[in-house]
Length: 289
Image (cartoon, rainbow, N blue to C red):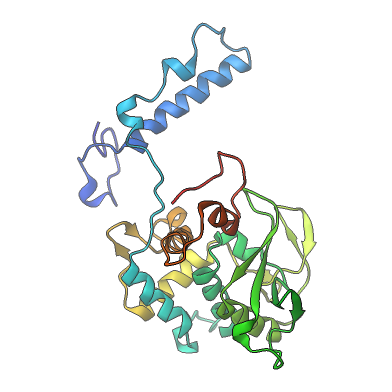
């Protein structure tokens, strides 16, 4: 089969039309069939006359082509997005018919968090008030303390429970802490909202007018805004980095940061990187970039 075989709608396929299917596309139906027959046997809808895992195994020629696909952002584009995020101004914010919905401090804090924290969009939307902590030699200090130079203070970010692990704390760039502190300083009092993952009523950080930011806010608003400011096209050689492909966009910053930390002059080990990303310790959750 080739791309668009048996398809009635081909809009958006572009130059992929008619090209051979890629390995993940070939493996997908086989995995679905294995699961289907395994469930039918488990629920005793079918007698166990064959082993779906063996009879419908992915051929070795296809399995050899499967592997991690972190979808990193090109270094030059990433540098421009970093510049745009660090130099964000009020005139860069999107304007609706009723004006700017979010204040600059909130948008800047969300943007810098996406650029520096290496978090999923869901984790960013679920950060809580007080998630930033400053320490020096193990002692907690105020982020705006004048007693200790900023370069000597470590900025720690408390990340809530995520899909692969429990809540954890990670060191982050002080720029992120300063942006979050600036938003917390002017953040109006907001009602406690439900964290759907933990079923707790919590003080979410990115809330305004009693509404939390959407998990799609980064894909649909922040990234296009940065692209406009940095004069970066919406698409690159690896596909769209904006809202045209929602599942692969906000995660690309996470992949890019992980790759840079692993390939740095003094790199993190794979286990250190796994802990910094908040990945679970089981072999199924381990991610190697």
